[in-house]
Length: 132
Image (cartoon, rainbow, N blue to C red; front, side):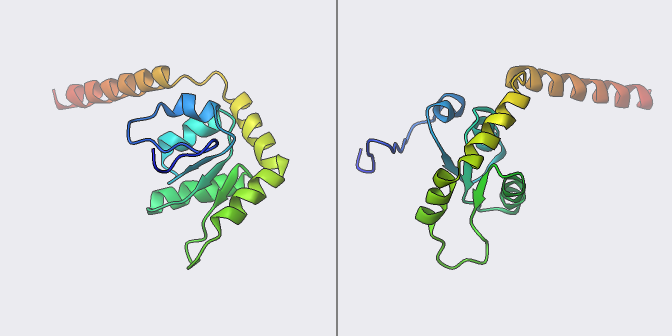
């Protein structure tokens, strides 16, 4: 692949973020909920390069908890290299990300999806009963 190095892989195919996150030292992404959750649950800090407001809000939360960094939305020429260096030079980012992963180690995405579906069914069942 044209843009690949020993420590960097770009994929044109879908990636299992849970596994990819575990194999990385840092996850650089747009700060979407799925990739961010997979990264933090793997104990990896995040550099969020947000594109939308909801990603910015999540990125700000990441920064406020010391789990990574984000690009300042007012920055005209952000230094991504500097942000990566800062994350790697401050072991606190990795330590806090590992603590986050440990705190939520019993989280199971499959169970979460099932719980959400069950709750939606309960709400719909209640709405149907109210109409009867």
